Amino acid sequence: MNKRTPLYAVHESLHARIVDFGGWDMPVQYAGIIPESAATRQRVGLFDIGHMGRLEVIGKDAVAAVDWCVTCDVASLAEGRVKYGILADENGCALDDLLVYRDSDRVHVVVNAGNRDRDRETFLARVAARGFDCRVIDTAWEHETRHAETFLGVRQTMLALQGPRSEALLQRVVSADTDLSKVRYYRMARTTLIGMPCLISRTGYTGEDGFEVFFDAREAERVWNLFLAQGEDLGIAPIGLGARDALRTEAGMPLYGHELDEQTTPLEANLLFGVQLGAGDFVGRDALLRQQKDGVKKTLVGLEVDTKRVPRPGCELWAGDTRLGVVTSGTFSPTLEKNIAMGFVPPSHAELGTTFEMDIRGKRHGCVVVPLPFYKRAK
Amino acid sequence: MRPEGLKFTKSHEWVRIDKDIATTGISDFAVKQLSDLVYVDLPEVTDLLEQGQPYAEVESVKAVSDVYAPLSGEVIEINEELGDNLDLVSKDPFGAGWLVKFRLSHPAEADRLLDGAAYDAVCKEEAH
Image (cartoon, rainbow over all chains, first blue to last red; front, side, top):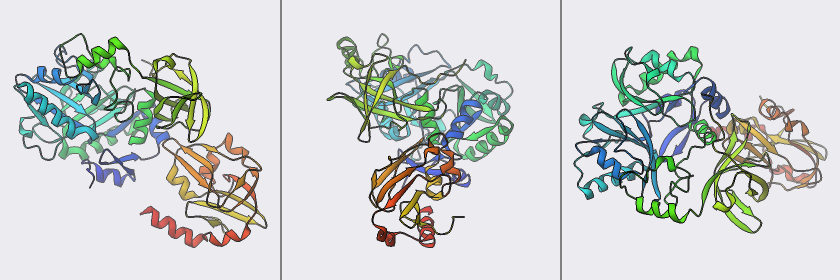
């Protein structure tokens, strides 16, 4: 039996098409991927991301513990800041990618739905092994009994608003003393939403401006409907995982299980901005330092292909008889109206403008290495 | 409403047979299931179709789907309009959104196709 977010019934009533995603029944689309992508890029999209995992790390050693567990520098992360990092294993390979929130008295960690349980166990094991004085609480887990210790004090869920009108919409519903123009990119804030406490961050997974909002799971339906009603004149639309995947691919953002996995390091996936090798020690650091010195064997590149047939994950990349690697994400880009793909190739073939071939379901087509991201919003 | 006189496959293709010439495409149900069509990869004139075998690909943003030949025969015309106007498939799948015309090589294969009522039942089943 798949898991469901508190909004499952709402998605059904909106006639969303439901698919399995990492063990969750999630809406893949409502009106369609193309109109939903446009709504997000041009106006504002509402996303149910209640399937994402959320950990709260509380206690004296919370910052030091998270700093040890993940690749990014948490120790020097200022209060109110959010940072992207990797949960690496001893080999520097990715168990997950995540966001770390440096709150005033605790640290929040947001992880992928499909890795939630493993991530929680990994954090717990590392905290125990090093004897850190802190508690790791899974705020979205049905078996968690310590919700009272968390910031919200209850089991929580999460929605995202993404798109140029996100700030205008969110400002209408948060407490008047929160000025969202001061909550800049990758910052978080505590505020209230229709009178109840919530956590917001200016983050997202679309390449657009936008916010992610954490709040009491029991209020999910009320908050969802509030956003839809308050955002009507702004052109709000509910957005499914289909458009979310197209949008993040356009923005060149990795998806765990595609660009990142247990055989891939953040150096190979060009995610060095989420790894601070010069800061404190963390699990996987030695391996990553070694890899940095020795060089990577594969590297992630952006690709455009010389056909209207759409590149998909799994398409192989070839130079004559040499298999270079494989496409990890590929789609028709609704925003750019052309085919885009990301994939791994040896560094020898990673230079911009390098040409080779992509095998799309048994037929080879020319492709060329292009810069990432494919799409960058105008600031 | 679907036009009269069409035959269907379980894999959601339709075919209109006029003596030894057949016109085929994908059904309204298939269009709705695929959604967000972005490209149709068609065969070439003189290519041979074999009943039940894929002969074309329909690409949507999310996925690619094979299109299967409802009957066997030789392609005599492809719908060139679709190159610039794929909306024809979404908006008029049984009319202007046809994919190929072909000359039947084994007309008796038509006995294996579904009539409108049987196809309705297939769609109803899959919608659940």
